[in-house]
Image 1 (tube, helix red, strand yellow):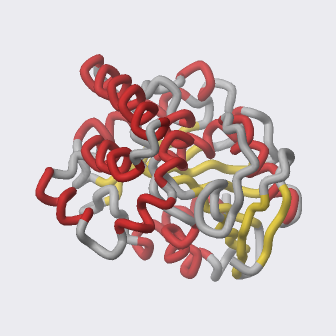
Image 2: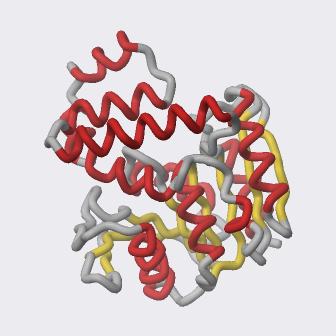
Image 3: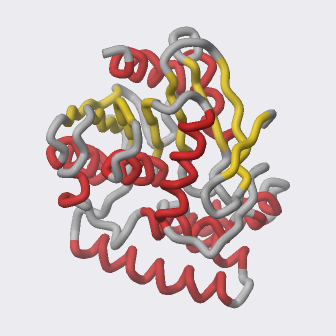
Amino acid sequence: MDKNTLSHDGTYLAYESAGRGPVVVLVSGAMSTGATVAPLAAPLSERFRVVVYDRRGRGASTDAGPYAVEREVEDLAAVIEAVGGGASLYGISSGGALALRAAASGLPVRHVAVYETPYAMSEEELAARARYTENLTRALAEGRRGDAVELFLRLTGLGEATIQGARQSPMWAGMESIAPSLAYDDAVMGDGGVPRELLAEIRVPVLSIAGDASPGWMREAARAIAESVPRGTYRTLEGQTHMVEPDVLAPVLADFFAR
């Protein structure tokens, strides 16, 4: 990240941009930095000025704390102001929930596209999210960052063998370093259910996307988002999972942001 801006509470936010044209800001999800969504910037930068930033508490960004979801909305406001004062947003996973909250708050946003924002679609899933929040809060309060990462990986559906393999991998130290930010994504997701009243306040066009090879509940959640906003569109991408291919996603986003 070669640039930075200052958020309202004194947090330094690292960002970089590429391309020319209308601004598009990419918002990463849990356990990720701006580098995670950077591969999407290259194809989009042929038509847009694409901005990638590290959310607070990860990558090259700082974290003035204490945390509140409103601070992350202010972070997005600071990034948008730094790059011209208006933007379209793309958020993946829980980053989509943040992008939707930002649009509902009245930020100068033109379009919002989200990919597989993982809202719970059943009472069983809501109960699992509540248990996750409780266990995550305890693990982080006790300084058990590795356990916090394990809790998140289980929530995403990874098996125990895969999780234990990840613990032995070179990437584990980096995952533990940003483990406190798991609480931020958990807060952004609210109680885990679709926030229909909040979504109804969004006045800009919203494109909600899912991969047709992802679990059915993710497609249901994506459809529910599109149905809950006044100007929503739902779309699936053939053969795609939660690890969506940038070259498949980029043309869809480009067509939407160009409207």
